[in-house]
Amino acid sequence: MAEASLLALQGDAEATPCPSVLQLEELLRAGRASCSRVDEVWPNLFIGDAMDSLQKQDLRRPKIHGVVQVPPYQPPTLASLQRLLWVRRAATLNHINEVWPNLFLGDAYAARDKNHLIQLGITHVVNVAAGKFQVDTGAKFYHGTSLEYYGIEADDNPFFDLSVYFLPVARYIRDALSAPQSRVLVHCAMGVSRSATIVLAFLMIYKNMTLVDAIQTVQAHRDICPNSGFLRQLQVLDNRLRRETAGL
Image (cartoon, rainbow, N blue to C red; front, side):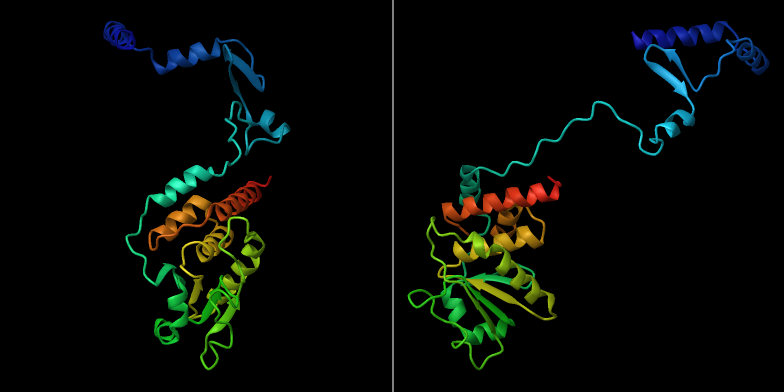
């Protein structure tokens, strides 16, 4: 239909000469003598000047009708997170891996190898499995080295509330990494659950990542598997951070 109309117009144009500029100007002068600020020139189509917008104070930001409301952020379900963790993106599980610039994730073996830590340039050690019956290192263990120590006595138990440490440890990591040449190791016994959860929380809080983004970032360098309780705590953090970002 549109093509046919265009062809018809082209045919008429060939048969009928176009009006001259003088004829068009005369046609405009003979029109209706109306020049309101706003006129309806077609059903629901208006032509107007800037004064109407100025009076409404919306010249720079005109009101737009029919904007689709973006639904509030919904954190991923526990099942979807577990599926994401099962799809391993890293084919390695070394004693220690760099998962973010100057931020390392590792196990107890790496934490106890002081010489290797010094060779890697590690300056700060965060032990998320501190305690006499766990990875019992502590500040005394690193005495005589330049390594700074931060310990958390956390259990790899779904009912253990690790979330109370999210912000203080994330601040410690942020402050440590802000110093030139600093490198931070976060570890637990295996380097896949407790310490991984703390690293994910840091990336979410200070690198503005969603939980899924943080998991994928770490998984690209090391296999991780926070227990179900820690995942739920990260879900709560994810939802709160997204709501704060949205100003809710």
